[in-house]
Image (cartoon, rainbow, N blue to C red; front, side, top):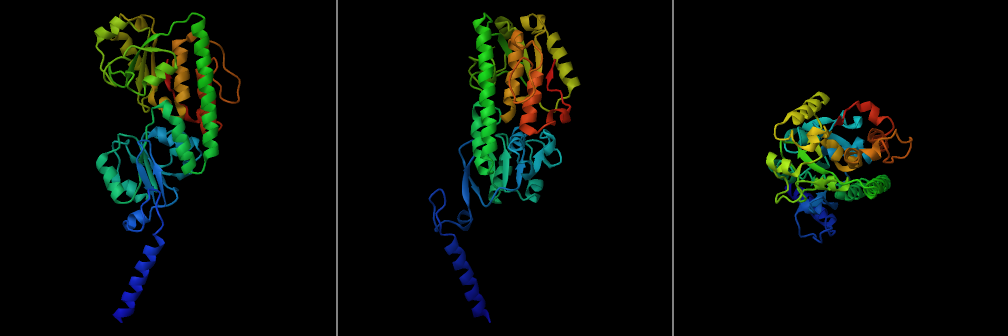
Length: 361
């Protein structure tokens, strides 16, 4: 009785080998391992790495709030099966299982239990978890989320991957309009004599800033400011109070985590206004100190961050009433643009459903 069984097993193995003899996207053929033969397509993440996909992407674990917002804006929330604790916006992702505190602190067992077709994370993703997931044939894509220059590429790649390219192009076109309108506003102000303000941008930690080597510098440049830390030799320099005072910024912007409460933001601003090392700067004397949440800078929401920044740097251009309802347009009121942009990305009423404060004051 053993011979027929052996012949049957041999036949099945031969059939599997024959069906796997197609060339993969990387040019590898039937001589490769069975795992590589099972790859249906290759996807390239934000680091340029080849990500093997073993089937259609229908179940996604996303452990970065900017990436979850990207999927929601692409109308792909139903594909999200797990998220990080910071991915609570928009409301369509709140019901998803929390499988990580952040990219840096994923729960391997919970991620495995969801059997995702793809895990989306940022560069802080835990390396040991990354290697274990790869060994289990669970693809992991690492993406940059705070680089405004790379958002369109993100939209194109995931628009193609998830068969929603039309929606991706719609968002890209709206971004192009918003960026163009903002640059026109800034150019008009400068032609009328407004000087680009010198800005101390404090990034998450006391006296920590960003230089031109950091992607975050782009936000200051695009909103018409002079970054006092632009020429520092490292991307995330710690600035001394003496250096800041010598540069004498007229505006201070503090970027904080997306989970910070309004009360905490108010207290943080008060502390900056009272900080001995800053009290002699023009920014503190004039109380031009602003707190803004990091989520506004991430992926598809970045035009809102630019609008807030520009309104603080060129207040005369943003001193009017709200713009008309309809297609998102950067006008005279950043709060109104935030509402319009949020509803455009995530659906009518998305802004009101959050009841969240994003900036102080």
